[in-house]
Image 1 (tube, rainbow, N blue to C red):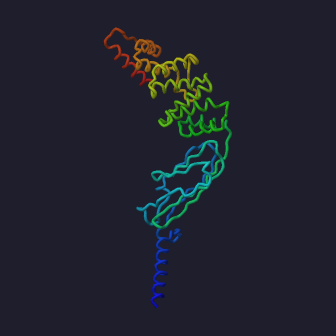
Image 2 (cartoon, helix red, strand yellow):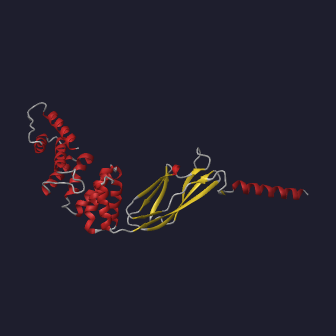
Length: 300
């Protein structure tokens, strides 16, 4: 009798432990029903990132004040994209030049309850020329994130005929995005010029960044002069709002920063022939500075 009692006790304990440790897959009528779904993505190459605020996607039925925990539980094709959750935001980052499909599984938990949400991402190929056209159109529409991802796609496809222009466009896109991590596109513009020393747009971009970011004022002056030597009536091909006057102003600002005040005066007079200042005046530097501020306001 004693043995039977002990045997029953151990059996009961095992049953309790088994139920206590069990992960419950949520059913449709469970009071802790986890709701929400990410739709399948079917797209062409070029879009670099898809983001989802998970608090807006997944909820617990009848309990709006409690949110499920989320994790990327599966990605069948990590070569196509990376899936990461950070600060409750799911980011899908596509690798340029990769096509095909992957299945993403997001596991949502609330206590011992979990539900897996499964969706697919399918990416089809486009030609390098089409990617380049789209990149330029996005840039000219001020959508610099999509411009950047499409320029990167052209580079990934190694389209030799467009490579210098793709790096140039990538550099300007990152400049407009304020992409500090990628040095505002500086290295992309350097690569563009290396591939094609006559790419005047890349040279102009380098002049702008040498002054504004790198603070290499002599380089900014040299690149600016090179731009205008190659194209007297320079106009940036992707944005006509940047022209020879912006390059002249950038040269003048760089000359002032480099303490080349007389050279700065000459450059200012190329922008405003009516302006004059007396180098012997004790207010000479102040007058130049004020004029530069006026020109910055005019051309910004």
